[in-house]
Image (cartoon, rainbow, N blue to C red; front, side, top):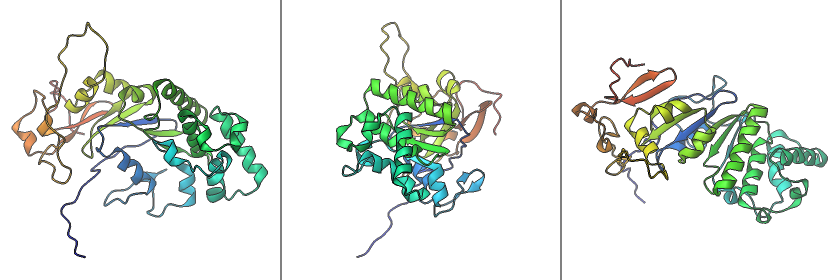
Length: 311
């Protein structure tokens, strides 16, 4: 069988950020922009071609150790795909205890599982039931309990509420915030739902076609969005306000192919900013400081920021 490579895709390119203890970073953008690839790279599920991923200032090796698997956990989007339908809840939650921490005593395992069920607001009798006996929100609580079982420091939450209705979403978000306040977990919260990220994130990074276009504190992104793509994302939110008459900031065209991205700024073909110039077609975006902790990647930033300095 003959094979040939048609093209190479940089799923994530030049992304750099940090997560502090007790902090939530929200990672937002359209489907396919590279959010989940960032998560998988941190977890060692996909390889990186360059750069480093650090944990406590030490590079994460290609082969994850049991210690790192204890300290970095993930909650996936679909709880049904994460739960073995043939296993009882006690065994699902206890699996990391056995495999990563070497705990095999039945009494100790059941005690720890009971503690976790209490933390995620599930009843003790739930321990000996099977996944099909639970609602979607309860299943997600079980997945969260399993992520907490090894006392992690960083939890990656990949669209953890997108499969739930709005009322259950709020319950899960409040649960996560309460757990973080009590135990100091760091969260990387991946979502396309701006209302959700506004509720939970301390800082927000906006991705487009594998790159960051803007990063800043929650209030900076929502009240002072500067990159045209961020502005367009915020304008896309559904609002029921008959008094609002402003013209929305609407993008045109399709997302370029990641196999053959356009030269210069990859957002240029869809940009409708007044600041767009010919330079955007061949220059790569610069990292520009808007204010403390607030940066955009742009060739010609909109809004008349004449005093902005490259950082």
